[in-house]
Image (cartoon, rainbow, N blue to C red; front, side, top):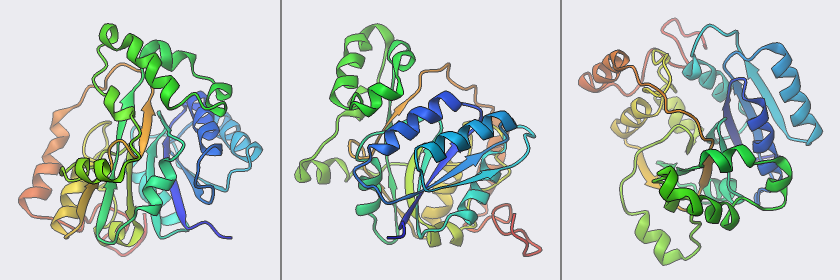
Length: 277
């Protein structure tokens, strides 16, 4: 049976964490999916190690890479979208590990004209540093990791702990999903057709933490796409690291697209001369 959904993972050098992600993918309750690695210029020795790990774990995968010329996440994401084989796409950042039901929650709940937008739970430095493939394979992610984070949450100042509570009750799900939520690049899914209609990601956002999700969300909304929050359903666990410094000068592109009410960016997948990428 051919896969019906593609998981696009943004990746750059973080090979140890990618191996943890692969361990989590092996435990997914939804088994039939394609993995597309969107590599923003990792060295070739890292690429070889990543490919070997994917092959060893029998992942159905494609590997999309370009040369390292600084942060170009949006550009390599557009290439990954083009290469993906399926009509439904799930996006995950390479510093986030998916919950066991992550793929199931995104794919089985898909709706035409909607983006499904999840959130993340931030791991403490201690929990993040002690994660292993073996612990993940034994089912550590879930109740066990939440208990460990809770023990440290007051000292570590973790504010997203509740995002790691997996909710099964349909009534509670419907209630918490009514709140309008924005897209976060580390955890969302969309029909490929809807993404192509706005020409994918605007490649002018060339600095980390700026634009790749907020600009995409704004253009999708203007094109009639609604955002459906799936907090506490599609869960990811975020690696501890020092927060990124967001450089505000690049927000000019975001404001420009908003002022002009842009939906289809000319700086995306298809360029003005009709070439791709």
